[in-house]
Length: 612
Image 1 (cartoon, rainbow, N blue to C red):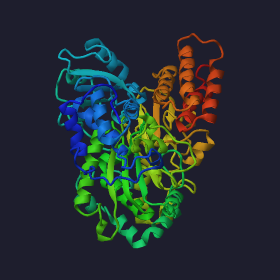
Image 2 (tube, rainbow, N blue to C red):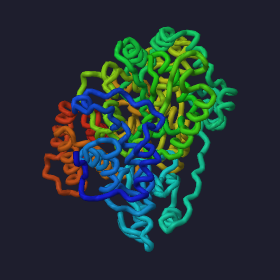
Image 3 (cartoon, one colour):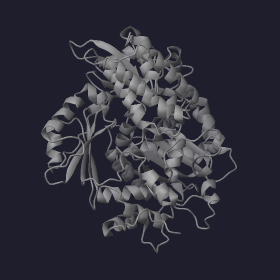
Image 4 (cartoon, rainbow, N blue to C red):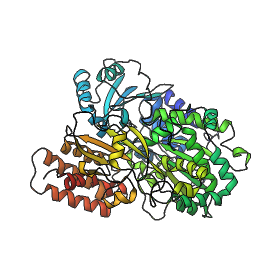
């Protein structure tokens, strides 16, 4: 079969980058990861050989990190090595915002222009870069650097932020946050990016912390420090209980998923454990791309062994031998820290063929995302891992029956998983005694915007929004609260007179809003709310995967209607049009992106009286 995209050959450097990942072309080595069974779509093609398509996105990353972009010749070579049709590989390469199929210099600076960074001067930062360097995509004098605007980089507690990507034989990515225009310009001129300083947790001295009790207090890559602070006691308890006992404790705890959907975790785990099809897979969704969300990043950077231990327990209870951490591509520090922790756990027998000498196998792999908000949706993650475009699937079948590689799959986010350690250490009923009857345990909130002390906060369910903002120091002296965005771009707004709302899932639903991914963004009266809403609409327009018409068209029409209102060119029916578009997207979109794309905008119209 002729699989050439065009008549182009890979360079020696491109071949070397890919061969470093996949092994030489004559090798049968497969990256140290057991190749999954062929899924039904691969089998239907009639290929006799086992597919390696699941290595497509890592292969594209390997090229980009070494060269700076993905050339036609490189795509041809990837297709030869993985037996993937060129059109499919090109479709995947062009799906992700962090990958480029157009020539780019070796150094690229991504400047965040999203919600929290706007509260802290990102627009002024961008204006200074444009004035002194040039517009997006323009090259430095020596042609070695350029810059682009970026959606949220997940650094909202230390905004404004930039991400620096350096392509080389030893590729490096670094985050600068908070960043000044002079620092960004120095990096564009070839200067060395300064090391990121991790600020202490705002609650660092709070003795009652549970999920965050080790963050900032132990060396995150020291397994000995982790064990001295109580690490792996929960896994030992899990082995004493056995898989059924673990499932019983998680169900007794009434733990709900912390990603926004709030599905009962024990029910999900039990459904996968009872599935006769093998193998089972475990996925940690660490692709938190909701503007204003950064709690999972804080846990991974500060307590990575907690996630590894929790995933090992989940795998033990549900019969999974292979787990993936689908980690945001914009989190280089989290990737480095978690990778080192996984290596340390494997070396000490806490991952691998015989975990803790107890006769069960569990291996853990980091799968690097590439800049697609839609890949926070569980079935889009499956497609991304399998080497397809990260587009959501229709349900049913549900993941517990047919998930990644068409096998039963457990998928939870970071916060949900690390709660399991508390459940096993305290017992299910003990965990359920904290919080409220329907919302048990504690919750992590990402507090940002115009508060004095932005950061990740842990409070018991039932604390009020007012109490949470007071923990964060409230607003600076002389500032006046205009609104609070709760739940992120897919959430809703609350007025200053609604701060006594108890932070529980049931109270949020009763108030016609959501806790979502834990975003709490306080906005003072300096924020231009109509333009703030424009940015939310532009975010959903850009992040729609385009698979279904209601979302693909609706997000564009919504943004256009808002632009007319903001610019004073309205026809008089824009607000009603926004409501109609929102209803259409809620009723007919395949996934939650389209179903929630108008939530915050309609909330601002109804609750805050914007455009009235």
